[in-house]
Length: 78
Image 1 (cartoon, helix red, strand yellow):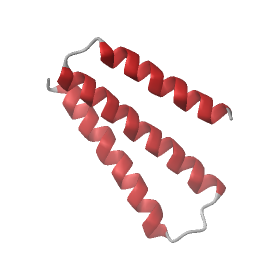
Image 2 (cartoon, rainbow, N blue to C red):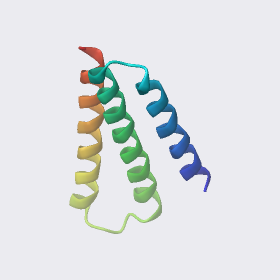
Image 3 (spheres, rainbow, N blue to C red):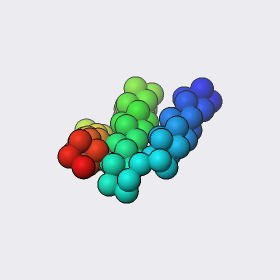
């Protein structure tokens, strides 16, 4: 329950910060927050379950990393 509460607080804070920004940096911030959230849940899934094939675990990590990099680039170069 604590992890879920922390993730909800993180997403809410990112949305509140993004509300006062122009469109491109706000979209980058929300994309970055989505990628970080995906990576956090992926990490806990790997730690707690970790029984599925490695390919499925890598796909989630790659998508999360792509979102983090895309969000960072959108906020950095706007």
